[in-house]
Image 1 (tube, rainbow over the protein chains, first blue to last red):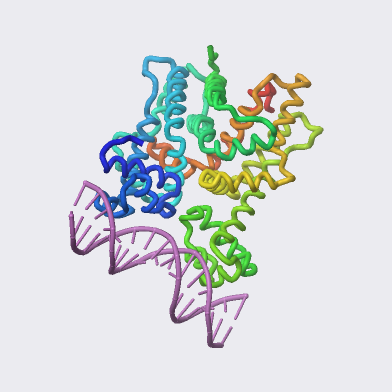
Image 2: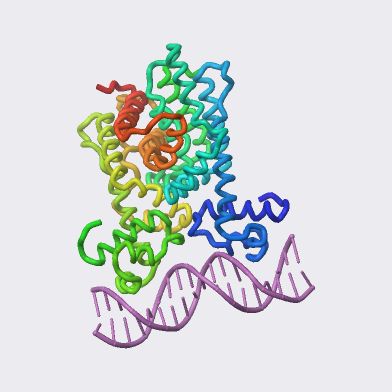
Length: 204
Length: 204
DNA sequence: GTCTATAATTTGATAGAC
DNA sequence: GTCTATCAAATTATAGAC
């Protein structure tokens, strides 16, 4: 937690609590405690709970979408661009392991909210990956694949390990194996191998 | 919702509400409404909120673990057994799309609870897949792979599509594409292709 | 801006009639 | 077993001093 202005400290604390418990499960008292202030100040800065939540959710959403558009240079071969994308995803998810779950969860509770938010995002035009894949297919650089299925596979392989890490560690322990942190590197590598396989490229 | 005894109706309603909002976010009133009874009856049947939650969570957990142990016959080749596993996963996740998220979420809030529950499950010895993979590697039927990474990849590819479906539909709409339900079949197929690739087998 | 004290509302839980 | 009415506790929100 950054040791900055009060407003930022509140947002930081609110992020933690809302991401863990959701809009309805979160408690203003918890947020105040985490920010080392009292409840009254929360209302001074953000009028009410919903407004505070909106601030957190908006921040999460734009960070998330911002990340999803980071993609290697157009001049590079498609597989290289995707490797860059994967590296970015892993970095992002390591820093904010709860964010994708938070977004998914809140959207499933209130789909309307999301539609409005995304519709109003003029910058975001959808996954950059899709048109890039299609172009490569047209140029016969890669085999014919379903771009949506590929995109979903890719996101699955990157995102789920972070989502499931609490449950997975326990399950693994049951098999008398252990979960090492360096496994994240292995997983990332396996994702790239998957991409190379799908696009019929070789990976170093 | 089954039109059965009151207790069962309560459990059904509680499952829906708890899965959506979690322990702290769920409201007893909502559960009562969904079950078409009043709050007092909830307490008559399940003393308090936590006990009701436990009943729901226990049910979810055992159903989940039960599914995770369904695996093709030992006599079959390993890839066939995994294909069976995948079919089972997709069927299960179609029926209970929210369950894995629910379990993951509640565990990340209260890891202790989970450890106890899993530790007390004497039936469950960990993923059946791991020892089976190791045996096949010993017999040189499949190449050397990291069984944990493989298991995680597999779960990622199967589970995430269901988790992310609310967000994914919106994202896809942004690219002027559309999400068809038959895509689930394509996804399942792509998972099997992934398995075949990893195990160096051919898929019909 | 920040605090304490308190109001207002929501929510979990109980009492008691039927 | 099921309901209405009500209590007690928790939780959001506000008032007002500093």
